[in-house]
Image (cartoon, rainbow, N blue to C red):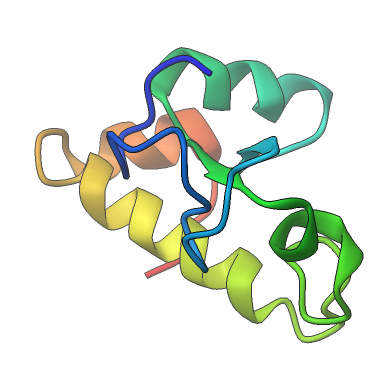
Length: 95
């Protein structure tokens, strides 16, 4: 896994600490996945937290983990970049 702006630990799941089995692109879809890769908008996740559990980032109908990751990513990015730069890259405010 290439560098993440949210963690330096690529061995453990960002959420639960189990062994990480997947790389989750925080902003996904064809174009946004490339942007996530470029800027490090991704985290390591175990399969349960990624897409196997009903509360996983991909299956939770309320999108709790998905939105928390997007907010955390935006906040971390804006520590060293402007809000306008984030908006130009992603096009949506999550905070």
